[in-house]
Length: 287
Image 1 (tube, rainbow, N blue to C red):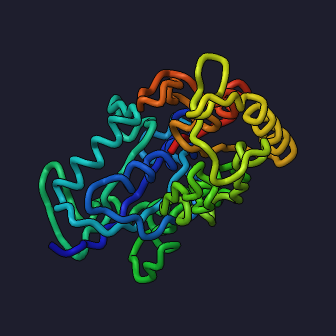
Image 2 (cartoon, one colour):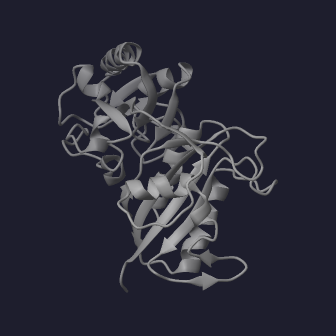
């Protein structure tokens, strides 16, 4: 089965809008037989239709997918549901909104799916981001719903996610989707464990109570705390607005980590540096 070229429009105007957009794109990258090809810049835009609501952040995404139109629609709706979208007011406030704009050159006119999207020509907040992706021949009616393009922000990130070989075993946890976002963020990569003086490769570690121990039983809590402190100093000096950290890590986890028995058992406990990020109330994403 061949890949299809699809263009999506994504918007949010509830909560941390930028985080909602990024999370939705990450979820799209996890879909079966689907690849994120391009992401537009992010734009602050005025609401249309129901105007008594906050401004939106919008972008467009080009994907390649083997999913059929209705399979993709179902998947998109599931992502919206996962991110807590509630459909209360038509064109009203929403945590996330993902619309299929174009699916190849396919034309569909049904109650639950119209392709190309029926409102596309009326919306600059759809078409200007699409223009970013290289679509030059779009016919649309310019209007004033675009306010401004968002500038790049500083993002502290686990270095292993960018492909640096800083993982305990000397490898990495490369996430291709992050390389698609280099025009959105100034990535500042860190490895708390290396900053704490631990070598790479190093023995696998887990949190056991208030201590961090290696599989052979060595206590490396001080090294982990030192690395977390060094990362905290970078946070404070670099005007960081968002943090993206590796999940399940004894340093970087923001939710669950392994319980110290080295039996692949996860518990609700953030990593040493992850706990600092949470307490500092910095916007964060876990991968």
